[in-house]
Length: 82
Image 1: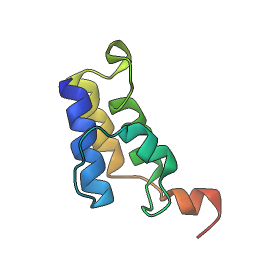
Image 2: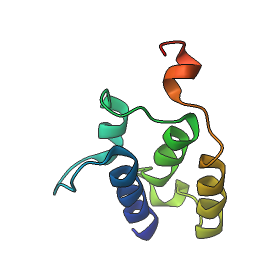
Image 3: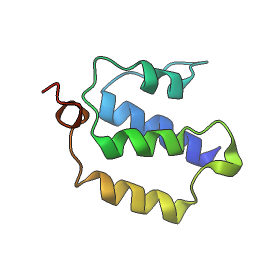
């Protein structure tokens, strides 16, 4: 659960939203229309919030994912909606 918790904290940081109880945060990421996520933010959130704990990244992989997030392109720019 620790990696999933990191995913929740990461979502709260990039979305500037308040934490909620009993929420499917991965569904919130997919349904997101208010937050301009970067490509790598999206990918990282998918990995961290993966429902199957065995498929979530290790702590060292999380560090690499977060380092990559610092050099990303906004999703709107990639999708051509910006």
